[in-house]
Length: 325
Image (cartoon, rainbow, N blue to C red):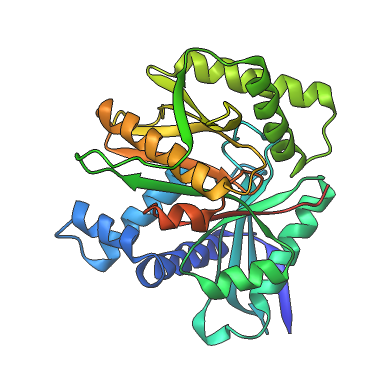
């Protein structure tokens, strides 16, 4: 018999920490390897204590907002779901969703619908708040991604990055001209606002006033924090606008630049325009002595992740969301 209940005692917490450590060693090996690199002489038990310290410092498990649900089969603990309100917001978010930080089922109990039951328990909690619910899944975790899709989750945002070589790429696209923009023309602001609105409405039914407020906050915050930035726009030979890209300092690393905004006009050459704009952004990134270009690609953006993978961008995973509101 399957039973799911919220963490009640220290035994539940100990089970959660032990199973999460097992997942670290077997499913998230790069993180475990970093622990061992930082503590080369540590025994496995000492590595476990490091994991406990880092996990409990990362999140306060006494906070009632933090939920750990434990699954039992015939009274034996067999899996857990860890969730809480997401600790960050993207520019287009109007609220923070409930976030599944981890879900793990012991190997000998897998294939019995426990993961699905835990997810539905978390969804029930989020729906009663009410709140949307989201998670991150690694791109090579096909089984988990398939489960999440079956449960109604969709890809919302894909973080992608590319380490850039010192050499300058050859930029050549027939019939397209790229110009630097000193400011944001009104027509481009309208286009960027329209794309931004789609991203907001992906998650919530926001009115125009709220969309405008979030967009203004995004522009103001970016322009104030961008130590370096530049907008580029592409036009055809008849001076018809084809697309634009806005790139600048990331704010989270001195060596990383990021794409703040991307607009591609409705044209049969959309893929070509996108590739040209990213090559221009990469050249600017190199010229400003950043090592990496980062983009948080939303599902409502004008390029998809496969187009950027073709250009050499790494795809570690997906932010997925299930809309409950």
